[in-house]
Amino acid sequence: MKTKKKLLAKTWRMAPMWAILTVIFVVSCHDRTFWDPEIRNPRTLDYEEIEPGTFVGEHGGAKWQLSLPNPIIWNSLPKRYLFFYAHGIVDPVPYEPVKLPEDKIGGVSVEDILNGKGIGYASSSYRDNGLVVLEAVEDMKKLADLTRLFFKIRPDYSAPDILFIGGPSEGGLVTVKTIEKYGYLFDGGISICAPIGSFQKQLQYNGNFHVLFNYFFGAELMAEGIDLGNPKDGVHPDITRAWKSGELQQKIILIMQNHPTKVLELMKTAKATVDYTNPVAVGTAVLELLRFNMMFSENARIVFKGVPFNNWKEVYSGSSDDRKLNREIQRINEPDYPRVRFNIWRYETSGTLIDFPLVTIHTTGDYIIPFWHDQLYASKIFPPRSKRLHKSISVNNFGHSTIFIENVEEALAYLIGVTSASQR
Image (tube, rainbow, N blue to C red; front, side, top):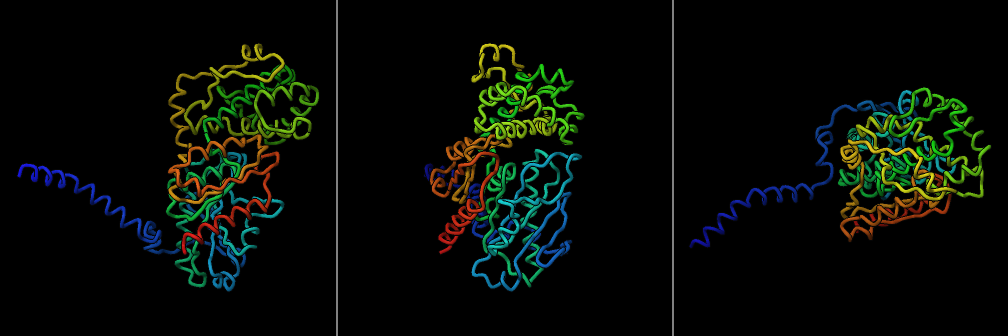
């Protein structure tokens, strides 16, 4: 009798947990529109049709756009696909305004590539420029809500059946972070040349390039009266403005042309993947790597509430005198770095896909966001069964996001194939 009472008591104590699990199960079985109160309670949506099939509007400081094929074609499709495009990083305001992306692949706009295949295109600026990954995730969620509302109040356009999300660089990280938080809203994703393996390692990579450039070219910069700042003290607004105008790059190009050996040492110690036999490619890589430090150093210090770089124990190699390099290079070890690391951790991906098909595309010669990100991300996908739904496309090319239309076509074909098979 006593055993029975204990069993009943245990069962009673577990009742709230069973109730929670039951609610979760019931909710998960609903159509995904269950999660969007705006869809259950439609209201007027403010937007403008700027040309046939292209609609634009604003929400919370961000701009949004929806582009659809001709409604006769769209409505007659056996399956309607809508792609949510998350754009890459944009120079902070006031250097660049918040605006809709106009990204191209092979000279063709992403919008035209998708619409040309009968796929709808939805995009959003983010509420701000710069390092805004966490805010951008919410903006993409809002974009999904707004487009669902659009189809609710526009019966002349049938609602899409399958929703994909994707983007390059910062947009690729936004894609994966959105999937991890709001995966129930989408059916598949494409992340292109994005820092999804380790955001902390990416920040170290950028910071290392900054202090290494100062080490190799400090005397030449001083002779020109140029102070590029550093990860600890930041970059002066005058330098940022000079970079944005293009004036600073011209001076740096002259310095590099006069010291080609130092340029090669810089790239080797920074572990940047580039064609060392091509001076133009090397010079381009240096300028593009410096861009992050010149345009986003202050932004990063604000976002992470401190200096997101620590090279106290870094051992550099690849120069003509590594001992001298490691002895004289600027060392940064801020006492609040552990707290800053916690803030950086919020930008890390978890690798949790839960049977979500994801394609990662990465150029093997990407010197801005190195190829090792793709490999690192693949190693942490969880649960293990989800690895079968991850497709990695490596593009044998130099440069950041220098992919081809056929790479996107391959990724889309994979996602369409997987989603079609899952619905049979």
